[in-house]
Image (cartoon, rainbow, N blue to C red):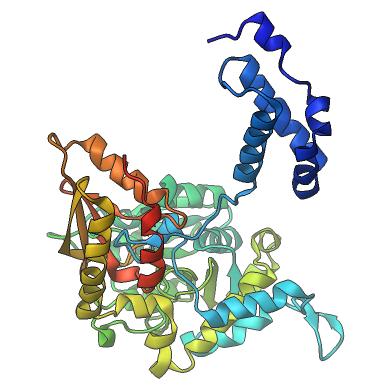
Length: 464
């Protein structure tokens, strides 16, 4: 409703409000430009009839509320109870304290990112992680960029610019955010040579595809889907031998970046970087923030001569990582030098290997507390559920877990009522992210390691 003329005339001016005693504290905290802009926005809302505020104190109260809300960071920690351990939308791998402390140390002060302390001359930022990567993968050399898509882009642009790259049709993947391998290849300046069929590709298909215009052959690990049934793919060792005979590099996009065999930890086997190199790959690209358990990064390991070419590519500078990422990644890689303690120290591995008994006990402790807070609005019960690794790793494998199933108890339970429950948990001071499944909000407790922090904010759960 549009306010009448007298109401508009009574609205105080911006300057009058800025001179108000209550504005002095706001100006000291938020700055005069921000307070001035906030006052203008509130006054505009009043004039448009979108606010019923009246009186200078009430108006300035609204101004303060708007300023405090806008000052809150949009990037916030959350409880990941979705059941997806490496959730792309939630930042993938949580970092261990050693990595966080390493990041904090170099963030406070200048650091020798590209400064050689021995010679006093310009250095190479890869030196801080390359030796560690060589140790844990067995590669001759390594380099790091800002994510795995960038790693693939850089490899293709360096070795196959304006040349052909044979790839099996069954490996032309689409990753999160609708980024597709053919699109990345096109942007890199190479030409995709589709080989074989979606479900069956043979060595002979690659042999026919390799010619004088071939820049390299690429194999893409189909980490986010599985083709089953009447299928065939070329083993890496056979494809590597074929590439050696033709004198073209063989690159493998491994994606998930596992550096250790997961099977001894009770998890399904995922191809490791060391295994892939041992099968004859000249280059392997993989992510830093998936199964490796580190920060977002794209890692390229393999033949020293090819890595040297990649590092000379001008695009490398545009894709490089900063000192914060280098610090975190080097701290994570040092953990792999002591594999006996890895499961306890690396959060990703610790979460993936938590015992079902421990998870269920946590859910049983929290069940009555959540139920008490929700009252008659919803029912709460401990439930069995399945977790997944996420971010494309082992997409068809489920990990037994436990959590809470929360269902609306209204006379006519509806999707809208359930959405209100979901929103209520999402609007807690530290948002709780679950998943909807079969008419219930499922809170999977696999990734909940701090019961006390979760329970402490339950009194602020506001369900209409």
